[in-house]
Amino acid sequence: MIKSLLLILLLSFAACNPQKSTLEKILDKGSPGFRETLRSVEHEVQIIYGEISRDTITHHYFGDTSAYFYPASTIKMLNAFAALQWMEENNLAIDARLLLDSNNYHPQRLAFDSLFNDSLRIDNLFKKIFVYSDNQASNILFNLIGKDYINALYHDIGIDTRIVHQLGESAYSFSSASNNRTSKAVIYDDEERLNLASSQQKFISSLHPENQVKGKGYINESNELIGGSFDFSGKNYVPLAHLLGALERVILPELFDRSDRFNLNDERHDLLMEIMNLRPGDLPPPIDTLADNYVKFLIYGDQSSTTYPSSLTILNKVGLAYGYLTDVAFIRDDDNEISFFLAATVHVNSNRIYNDGKYEYEEAGLPFLGELGRLVYAYELERKSAFK
Image (cartoon, rainbow, N blue to C red; front, side, top):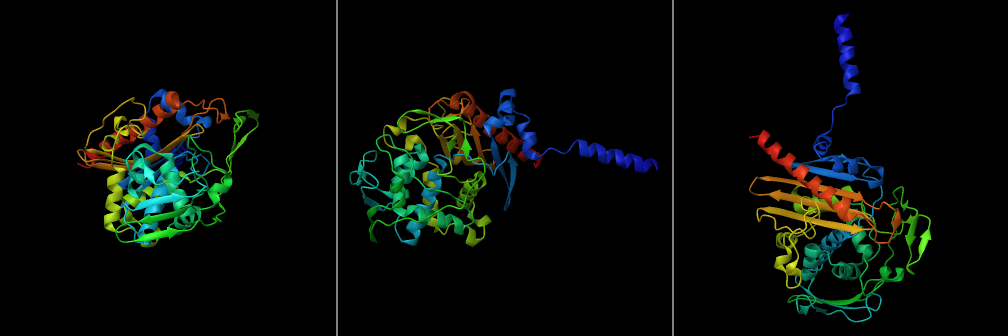
């Protein structure tokens, strides 16, 4: 009888005090400001930590990772991966040259790259995307291969996407119609030459998460404040787990079934890894003056100008728009022999008005992501020590 009562008490205690998850234990070590942001409904925090152990990735989650957030520039990573797969299928070298000619995209032919002082090359577009998040470079790839190809490719390898539009450039605005045609283009290298006609794109997304209508106002194209919610249903969207899944398929393809990963030869894959690991100092002026952490929100996002150790590899893509900050990353420290995946998004728009440029990126968003990266990094160091 006494044993039965003790068992009941123990079970009741366990039910009232559920075991915290690995990620919750990590997050509990954050500063008061970090924990306040973490628990705030308004900040819409989503986190996925990918713990790597031998031949598996164990994912730990925080927040509602099925909820809508605006992915912003993180979709450039997916455009780049898709373009590389497209080049593989067309037997084109990664440094193939490109002549883009389409009034749907820009009012002039695009044939010259002023940064590299050279004709347009695909590998240089990749460098612009990963080193300093250039919008035009991603838009060129989007217009080259088209949203039909991009979204179909990801569907085939188990990644949900709604990549439907270009990203804004300071000198141009894009009509909806411009997103629905590929560009007329010529691509050439030493082996192949492709002449591509413009083609109509027909992709219609079936990806419709809840709560895509947000806020209490927005600034329209005429710079007028419009009362009422802002509708994101026509905007790009990729769930956080699927952004991370795309990166994981590139970094550790051997962990996925052949049907669920990109089909890249070793040379092409290795060149992509080299490009993703470049730092601003590896590019021509004026990009070479940017700090190493310019587009590294996790670990270093709240540090104004940082050169991080050569032993540390951060292969990632960030996004920042409409008050959403996102980083999807693979982080490896060769000196300490640790590696992990980490993806997170946080929303910082206290006035709930979109497109007004008034967001708390510096005050709340970047400090949160910087501390998050350091917390998980510290846990990885502890985890390694425990196995010694």
